[in-house]
Length: 394
Image 1: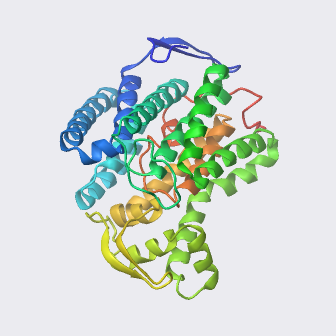
Image 2: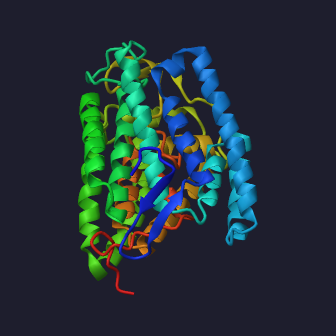
Image 3: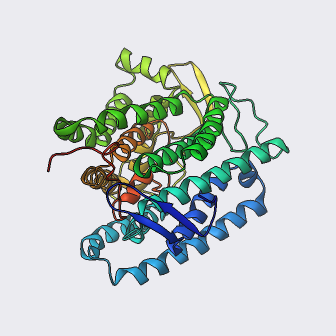
């Protein structure tokens, strides 16, 4: 299988996806995955002309995405169902000042009829190439020289957590493609080994836990049989459960000792959630803003924070996109769960669960490129291999 060749071959024991040319959507996805990772590089955040070039490239790619959707809309069967959702996303964009929800919806719509194996293939290759480039940047002095609290390496990114996130995404996409289509195991082992070392260098225990959870859940689900149906219902509620946990722990932080212990375990993330909820209103359609605050006192640690950030997708989504945006995001999760289940894809179900949990400690999972299970909603997910699928009795 070529790294960026003209064809991508994926096969399985159910439907066969023969060698096919890389589609325009695949090429666009590769560029979007790559540019998304670049935007998180330290150099691209601190060198103005590099930052401007990424922004310009993203605008061009967004325009191409819109054109692709318009061309495909004529043959998209579910366009009438997706149109109301589109209007809600547009309303959210007007209030939040961000097109991320609209962009996610367009990426899902444009995936209609695409092969999911190709999506995974171009995705991990693009992010892996960006990760390699980040390591090169760090080696030549274009990475962050900041000393981070846990001593992790940022590997060319602005923060070790970002490097860990993208290395984890490569591992999960590689693993998903191998489990679904069983091709290129040797090459994937080399890539995953490199990315695993990157995760270790960043010092991110959360990323390591997410990787282990996907491996474990996909194995359990793949052998669940009929008993797995109840398990799926429980797992598909994961985003709602984590959202409830996020709000309960944030609002009860100062009154409940257990929550304070959890806040220490999650390195002040629950306190950051509380500060954000106390400082900004939760609106129906969200609001525009960075939600960063300066000079905030933390009574639990008896310390002043120079700046605060939001390290939780649930809080970030709730404040940026409002109640409507949060409902749309969770509904997308539910549809992706059902599509992955119906296609017998245990590894995608497991990935969706793990990323829903990961979203508690990271703020970027409203991006469907990182939350790549969303792209299975309209794509042809052909993972019917009995050795890895959910063996549901039909």
